Length: 172
Image 1 (cartoon, rainbow, N blue to C red):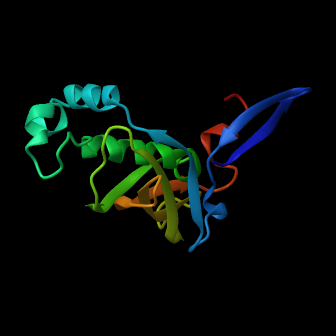
Image 2: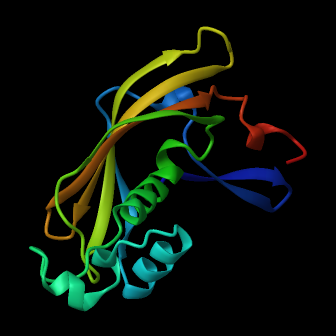
């Protein structure tokens, strides 16, 4: 998590998170913290909110007969949490997400698992059409506390250059 305290007046500071385009370096890896232990409530609420009615996520008797022997955490929930973990490092200052590719679900996640995430900078380039912005692509990996990789994906974001983010404005 990248955090700085910006001086906004005498004895007054404002926290600021995220990275400017210039701060990304290809090959750098950011370990996102804190981790998150998935609860049954998390899984149930997310499953209900998204109207995903597959019983493997919330019916213990059904899930007991599956190859997993117990309910799986909804993979869209784990994707959302892993992305959320990466925001303060990757996209807190971003103008927007430009795309998501190669989402891979490589291991199941169960209630009680603690998950972590890390992102590797794959590429960066100045925007061809927006001179105060750049395009950054990262590969984010979700890992359980025991080191098991359960997810990976690539994400491309449009990031401002130094001095051009919303939180650089004097009245923000």
